[in-house]
Image 1 (cartoon, rainbow, N blue to C red):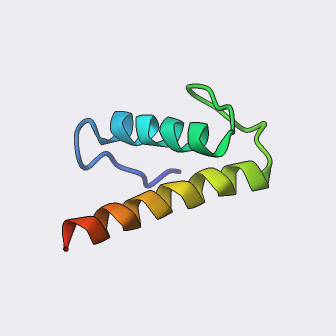
Image 2 (cartoon, rainbow, N blue to C red):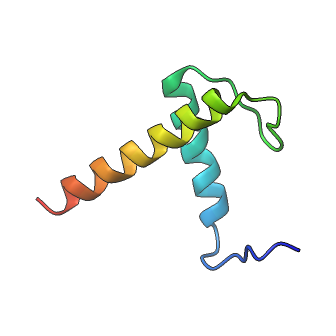
Length: 63
């Protein structure tokens, strides 16, 4: 049973777009939908890039 609930309408689409942008930046090809064929290293590099950009965005916003 999944406990994931959509709290902000439209957030999923924006996060998917953000994930695609970050994957492109680190050179990992992903597709819409299931990407279970990615290695842990590839998935981690995408997630790491997402976190890096979110932190940069936050830091730029508070300056």
